[in-house]
Length: 132
Picture (spheres, rainbow, N blue to C red):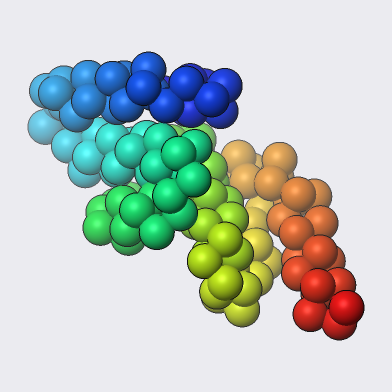
């Protein structure tokens, strides 16, 4: 789903997101499956230039996980979704809130490290736009 959305094929991404939502998760994976489905739908909305809907998808879900899972799993770490949330907040003009999300990248899980440099670059860009 994420790949299709990033390749600018939101219709295919939406089909995969719907398929993900129809799967029956294992009993201990229902919360994660719901979270991943919402994240996929958020990515689809973002690829369709609809940041408000994308952010609403992310905000509507609540995924709680044992801390060890967030450290040990790229899915439970939610790094991709947290970075997307920051980008959506910027798109909606909520830059102070976005800065907090960007600044927290690479503090919870090793799976967030790939977002550290882009997050810092986005913070610098936001600061430049405020000054200039």
